[in-house]
Image (cartoon, rainbow, N blue to C red):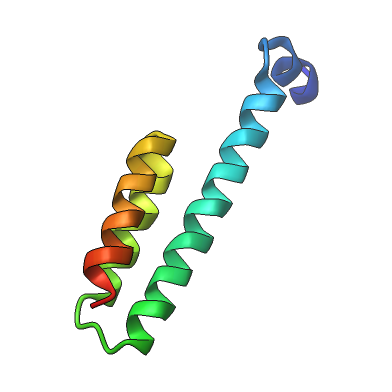
Length: 78
């Protein structure tokens, strides 16, 4: 069978896959930005903040991600 036909048979299959890829790219970019920012500020937990914010972006809703990102901005940047 043609994989395009199988994938196209799912309702919203292509759109959901595209949203998943976009979500993954955003999680990686935000995690990388947080790591660079925390490293520049000589934060000992730079990798931990980056992983936490990246995973929050990947697995939590937008509200959960915004809460974790706000925590980094107000607590982690000090």
